[in-house]
Image (cartoon, rainbow, N blue to C red; front, top):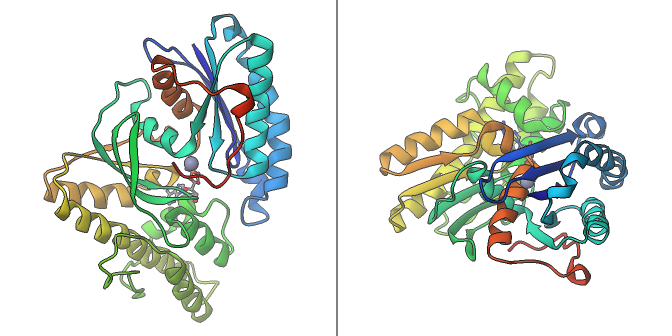
Length: 328
Ligand code: KG4
Ligand code: ZN
């Protein structure tokens, strides 16, 4: 079995996965959303202090598996420097005390492996990663061959939902609440411009749309539920149209059979439905992770680590470091 740890942002999570069967034997996650909500976003130092309390608590519950462990896996990149350090330090301590090898896991690859929790891997696959930190088209051909094809020039898809929510004085994280309010709104009421729609570039940008929404919010009645719902719906429509436009462009260039949506924002049902329609148009099979494995979790880190273990990809203790800014 492998014990995996995730603390790249505001979720403390630990999982235990059976290496041979890939069965998830233990999985616990404590989110800090409530604690960060009053600040309208994640406060790194507060997040790190909370991980320092919650990770040892979760670990206590996983103790029954200690005798059967073969390795310790941990997210070491990318993420918030101070929060990554909490997980990395715990992994090192466990590696030393239990005399087990360490497996460093890239968080983005972890999101890809969220597709394969308790399942066999399926490659090649074209992946759209939409999270709070990233918006990227990724080609995943095998464990060793994963490359980014397109990424964001500025903000990410999930982050733009968080920022719109903050501008409307809604809670953090903004994604689920904006999606919920959008369901009641008129998505055609406000015409926001789709970013980079005239650019041939395969890239994403979310900073412009955020400013358009800000200007619109200044003109609406902040006490009107209808106005707020209409802003959410119109924003969500445009933000999603941007993803669809660029992916469509890529689908036209490449013969794709399997496409997957991963990352925290892939839990958005509006986005899932729109991509389902696009995939149907191109005769592509669409894959998604179970809703509970879309946002950050240790189960996906453990699933990736099972593959790493079988390929004997370990990280020497002295080389295990937190790399906040790395991609792949
Ligand atoms: O993958 P994740 O848990 O953390 C990162 O790796 O960043 O993604 C969190 C992000 C947040 O920005 C959150 O607002 C967004 O995913 N998110 C959503 C939805 N649920 C979460 N965005 C849009 N619609 C949702 N339903
Ligand atoms: Zn994530």
